[in-house]
Image 1 (cartoon, rainbow, N blue to C red):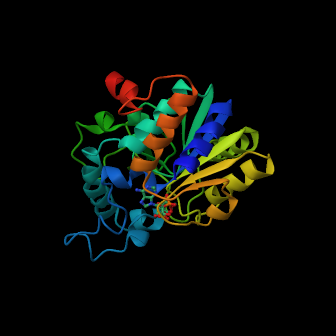
Image 2 (cartoon, rainbow, N blue to C red):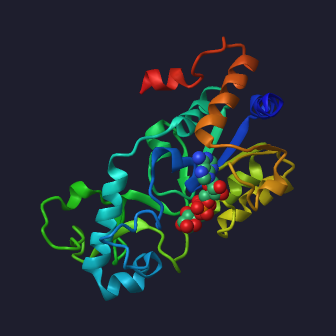
Length: 265
Ligand code: APR
């Protein structure tokens, strides 16, 4: 395994333009409940695939709003794990790092990654059915309506996350494909690689001749494309890679290679 950590670190040390592509697995060690896990006794009788849709919201806006309040409540007190922090620390060594994530949990931003493309939105933001965007909870804190009304037009507010059957935000998708085609290396962390169109991003990197590193405890649809496959949890694998990278870059080996980032937290 040591040899694989070194190989991955060598790729990262040479990279000038890195894409990190992440899925739900990178947040697993932060204790994020996935759709299924969030279905506790209270909400277990509902099918998330019915609730997380525009039709479901129009049919019963109060129910869908309260379901998200329940899920976001679970998200509220989770923090970035060493995997997120290691990804943020890459910016100390690689000139241009962009994180393209399928997650809505805001944890890459919270860990300090400065350029994050969120393909499925972000749970901290809201938009209205009339198309006004960029609201946060502070914008409707004084309202008692459920769901609250848009401060701009009075239409219902909804979480600014992509629901089943909805298109991904075009600007995010366009940037994701452009960065994947232009990168000189891709680090894929914690995705099954099954949900399109995001799952095609590694193919774009491969076509551009970029080496691919994958971190996942299980093989995924992306593993056959990987030059280096680190089979294990991100929170353990990525700090080990960062340790090797710090050595290559001439820094002393530290107990926790991401401690500089932690120090700055
Ligand atoms: N570290 C890294 N990877 C992990 C870890 C971990 N600690 N634990 C699990 N994994 C891997 C799993 O092996 C799996 O391959 O994370 C991956 C998670 O896959 P999915 O649950 O399919 O999540 P994701 O790939 O992000 O799904 C894409 O589908 O459910 C919808 O909208 C949702 O954004 C999601 C999209």
